[in-house]
Image 1 (cartoon, helix red, strand yellow):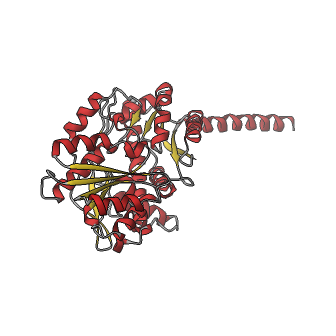
Image 2 (cartoon, rainbow, N blue to C red; image 1 turned 30 degrees about the horizontal axis):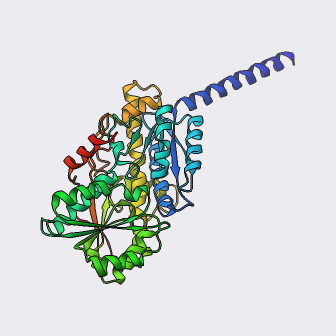
Image 3 (spheres, rainbow, N blue to C red; image 1 turned 180 degrees about the vertical axis):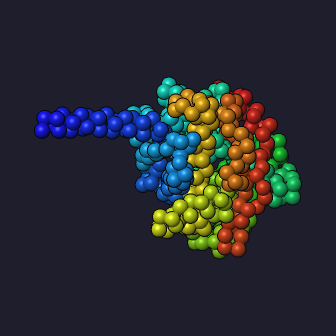
Length: 413
């Protein structure tokens, strides 16, 4: 009996050691990604689609063995588009050992920029935040990794120029924007281009929460009568702008929206594709379900006996979530390879992010190249337009007025 007890005690001790070793090994072969989101606040119309897209791509990766043998654990925090919870989220990610942080929102990015640098953790701000963060030398730990508001504004002007016959001289462009720092961000580029291209720019600010703009739209359509409208609205306001402009008889084919007023949800809330026919949208990720990565996610759902996300219903914001997760994973992959398979630190993943080159995710992402100097990845966009009851690609990936943008980047402090 004594021998049995002794053996049992030794076995239990060995089991405890083995379990502790297994846990430690599992943690060693795990990377933590921090994900900020808004599922319940002012921009939930974005978050309820974007954040599931992020999770689904990571789940797909993990189902195939993870990234270079490391499983990814995503810690998501819903900050309700408020700054204090975003600051708290950052601290939680640090405690969890996150190697990177997916930011969400321009005010939140501005508040966290210094903290990211102090804590040496990279944060991504795709399609929002300060455009100056494209300069990796001045903003070493913030990565836009998608067209900034400056790049989007420049692209909107270039598109209007093409649609108006190749010249903007003597033309009138209205800028209808959400009256907050994000809405004002493209103004410096638009004002510069108005001078160089010879068009008259007039701005129309929409106060928060952005659901009342009848007066602004009446001013645009009744008094200013522009040749083109560039809209930069988000949350519930894009759908209001479509309804108001349509209601005043303004042709939707003369309207282009920056990226946060460019989704299926915005079009449906405005009254559907019939109402929005002709409406142009700027995108920094491909739209729809005709991409291999989306097909792979759908197959993963089917293998689990679950209904897959409906591409035609949610693709704009969902695909952006997939894109962000894919770029994060690529940065981690570069970092792990650079360390010969060893577990990377956040600093390693930052270097991995700055080593991304030729990444397209099967055509869903523009030709991505991130360097220590360029954290934006080139500022590429596509235009997708409402045509025949759906969003249709209107041209290939393009960049606009890079010389103007680079000049403004050089002038920032």
